[in-house]
Length: 178
Ligand code: 5GP
Ligand code: MG
Picture 1 (cartoon, helix red, strand yellow):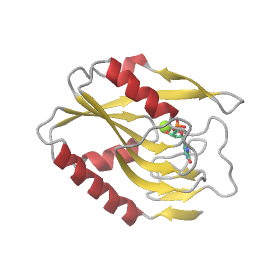
Picture 2 (spheres, helix red, strand yellow; picture 1 turned 120 degrees about the vertical axis):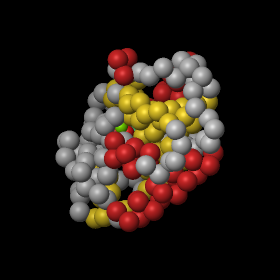
Picture 3 (cartoon, rainbow, N blue to C red; picture 1 turned 60 degrees about the vertical axis):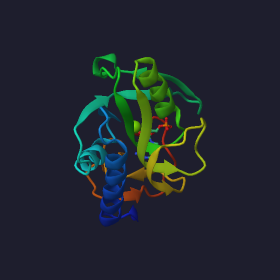
Picture 4 (cartoon, rainbow, N blue to C red; picture 1 turned 120 degrees about the horizontal axis):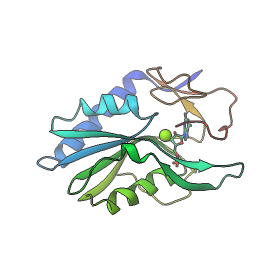
């Protein structure tokens, strides 16, 4: 597979993001809310670069995609939703693609009384966004290809790779990821 981002590149960028977040959230009640499952590796590395008291919550969410390419409503596993009232929420995801998942979650967190809601993504795909959402922190902007590794899967494989690679000969398969 073609390696798009090496382990060293990712680690350096995650360190930089951690330093920025640490500086900007100093003295604030930070809750990092990560979207399962693809964000797990990024989450684990990033929180160890933030020298602040913080809470971590995990959400199971997906915008249902049927045969057509339009995204449906966001499916949210309510059992996972943390109490964010009065907290500064940083929503974390592996990749910003169409933007439907994160924009719906920003609304959800705001409705649930978060004091502020910002977003951090490791990757952002060029030319794919369907809803406007400017991530507050972004690791890398990448071309429109299906990528795996560093948490991102194809058919539940490849998540454990320490780098990000382009899946050969692949068009984004419907329903993949998560
Ligand atoms: P969206 O921004 O379209 O609402 O959803 C983003 C989600 O789609 C990501 O969290 C991820 O689960 C999945 N996704 C989008 N692009 C890719 C990709 O290139 N590779 C993998 N493995 N998942 C992707
Ligand atoms: Mg996902």
